[in-house]
Image (tube, rainbow, N blue to C red; front, side, top):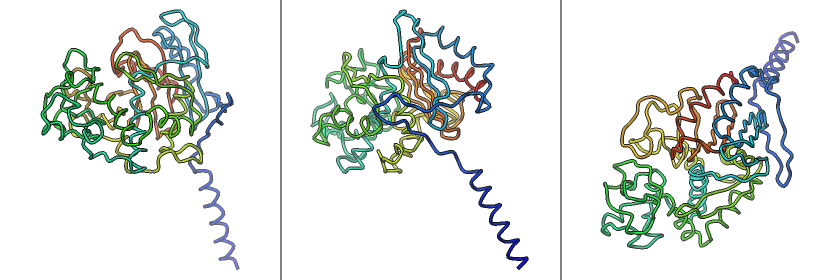
Amino acid sequence: MRSMLILLLVLSVTCCNKEDNDEPSLYFPPAGTTEWAESEPSALGWNTAALPDLLDFLESSGTRAFIVLKDGKIVIEEYFSTGLTGLPFTATSYWYWASAGKTLTSLLVGIAQQQGHLDLADKTSDYLGTGWTNLTTAREDKITIRHQLTMTTGLDDGVADNHCFDPSCLIFKADSGTRWAYHNAPYTLLDEVISSSTGSEFDAYFNTQIRDKTGMDGLWSWVDNDHVYFSTPRSAARFGLLVLNGGKWDKTTVISDTEYFNQMTNTSQSINKSYGYLWWLNGKGSYMIPQSQLVLPGDMAPSAPDDMIAAMGKNGQLINVIPSDNIVVVRMGENPDGYLVPSGYQEDIWELLSEVIR
């Protein structure tokens, strides 16, 4: 009897400790409402004394919106109406994602593959037709959807306008898969690949497969040769939360292909270790930047957690996802440096944010 009581006591303690050590479940805000649960930074043990320095920097650098989620709940949400233009900005204001929106397309490609509409190994010409570039047919046929996702098409990004996707602008530079270069035009043509393979307009397919399932707002709009997503900052936070949860929104599975999801959020090729499928990766030991062939030593954002994956767009549009801490960070606004990919500005933010989250 005594042995049985001891065994029950041990099992009871083990059970209780397991519950205490369980990872916190993620909160998902309901769709069609402004409701979103919040957590106080002080209740999380964050260093609130360091928060004013962060917010001052954000405001002085043209930030319009800044959101930090922990376990899905809002911990920091700030809107700045001064900016560089002085225009008012609120939680219901729309802003452009710039190249941070590439990550939306990346996830959508994975959904299309999961549904059997395409395969990453397929030739791009299977969906765009022969002659979508200025290359010979033999060279053109070597470019695949995977090359478009990884920025390794070999097409020349040094043309006068690397956003131009007319065949005359898409000229040979290197064999596909042998050169990494941040080239907008081949990425933009993924829209047409998705439309051709699914038989659905790109915008409509995106809305049904991602936007509506997560309660996001927003729309795609053409700005010259770029197809740009516009939304409220909270919708960017919703997308970050979706990615944090591995492609599942609460009980709704948006993408179930874990192999694709893992490939998307890990090194996709051997040239630029800090690049997945249109996602930027931290903690890889080296990285490349747009308009350069240099491989830079170190991590993309040394002050950020090593496992951070990032959506980054011109003028400081950022969605940072940190799985180890269940954190999502969103920054929207203007930025004086105007870089295509604001990796330096992202590091500036994390130098200050890491003092808050410690």
